[in-house]
Image (tube, rainbow, N blue to C red; front, side, top):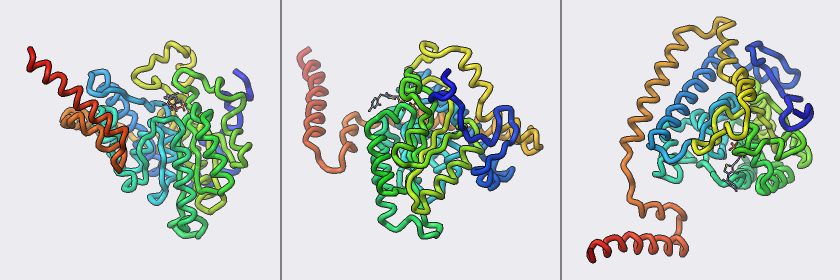
Length: 375
Ligand SMILES: Cc1ncc(C[n+]2csc(CCOP(=O)(O)OP(=O)(O)O)c2C)c(N)n1
């Protein structure tokens, strides 16, 4: 592996080693100091519960209850750390793997599965949660997020020093950084000093394509070309993810412009339940990253300082089990909407193409009835 390439661990901000020792950092240590033991336990708890939910969703897909599931196992620290740094007034544009961020924004986890059961295009009210709908078109939402951030600034919601100062966080993957939309978003955000944090989860793969096929340099270096301050952080270190995001949000909310964070992490699961990662990566690689599990390292640290008890672990296990049960029951109880309703929410206004598709669909349905009549 190239020591200075996109998969190197060079320059990562790290505040918790993979064996669970606390580390300091001259620029970001002060943000981590905001986290007391209760806050860290809360993060551990969130990561644990979200992982259990993720595993439950994978099982439901395997049982034929979901069309697809997008796993986020291994990326919990990047998401929970950054999610905990957000304030209610901030606004998040996720891609489609940000289940842990959704949890921090108050989205009830089972609700996410409405999308993956094919019942709804989106499954929550974005304004109620400060959390936009999932976007499957890679990188497209980076432009939406930048426009939203520019509007926030025009609405006087940055640089006042008040609690109402806000920022946008836009999450996407390493592969998305190769998309035109993301590069256009960085250009607009930079020249407009938009209050936005581009949070890249470099999970090392765009489906089967390694980050090494997306870039010659660490992805954070791309920000420099746009004049956007950029930081590489150990994405499996929840403390560092929190600290770096906290700094970035304060920067953006103050009116100083955008920040790019590259959270270097590893997708421990498959790209989706339709993918077989054994086709393109080694067991040795998986074993290396299993030792860097984001939840285990925080657990080791908290146990070492006497801030996580067997009762805490047992309570989280019981809660996870209960959430799994509630998830299964909720999903199976959802009623199937009439197929034609898929045309209802594509556009707010009537649209000629959608109307033509709806008409085609109804002719198609009728053709079966006609066949029956002639039989
Ligand atoms: C515009 C567009 N091109 C291609 C795809 C197909 N596609 C779905 S996921 C994916 C890989 C994305 O990788 P990355 O940005 O690293 O995010 P990750 O899935 O690893 O979180 C691709 C190419 C798509 N959804 N949208």
